[in-house]
Image (cartoon, rainbow, N blue to C red):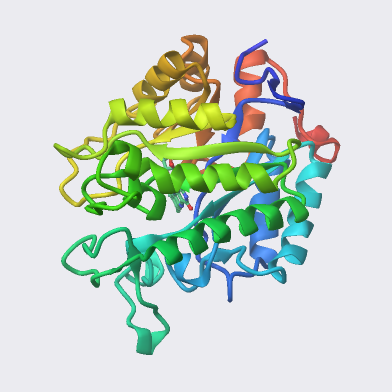
Length: 353
Ligand SMILES: Cc1cc2nc3c(=O)[nH]c(=O)nc-3n(C[C@H](O)[C@H](O)[C@H](O)COP(=O)(O)O)c2cc1C
């Protein structure tokens, strides 16, 4: 049997396989609510055989959205709609996961297919916040530097969001600490120039993200598995890098994070990278070996044999697929046939296999 289609046990949870849906913004919500789009979109990938399906980034506060159409989990009213999704995923023997996030200085923008430019307050946008008043690029507005009180409120926002996620039936929570959004902004010396306890040196830059994880661990039950997505490097000199990521992941492991989802980049327009198949796999491999924690590899992984080889070489424990799952929600059905000569399609589809 392939490793890709062998189960993975994380604490008490058995996950049927190791091809998982990477979080992908759908920009299709109103006031943060899920709707039929989300049910069909996420549900299709569960029907298609993914072992775990993760929602897009769900904002922990209205100002934590990237666009006004982002998914949200900042109020109790959001729970009911999300329940419908977790219930459906469970019926497909698929683990339901939610990514919780705050966009920081990269918020208040239009949807990508409307150009993705900044939206001002008059047009429904909002004031940006960040560890330091440094804009992401020359088109974004200058964020307000967060006060200590506001930082503590944000930690509570993350914890409240995690509580709601569990109430909505999610079995897995991933905290988004990558791609130049708020938690990554605290980690990276490019965006964090603070001189107080939430900056100054590596320990200070890690404080907000680690406090968020500690608080989440305090409020969720130990039935829920906890993942963190990091950007392993900024690809910028004197920025966040793999060595700092390793130290950060050691702390995350200590607090009880179950798996690191290893992405990269997003904090600077000066980043130098050439994305090619497997380009982020070395980050997963190194963190897995050095820290001794489970990792997920992501980024331009599209082929079943490619995915299997990454796992067989001990570079990762799971594979996240993003765009390939948008192209083909049934990717795992075909991949299992390729690797194992059989497949486990839902009964309703059996006559087509
Ligand atoms: C439409 C789209 C939306 C995305 N939204 C998110 C998101 O909400 N959170 C996140 O961490 N990454 C997001 N990503 C990044 C993906 O999760 C993934 O890491 C990236 O696309 C690389 O994997 P791939 O080559 O398999 O697509 C998004 C990517 C796409 C294409």
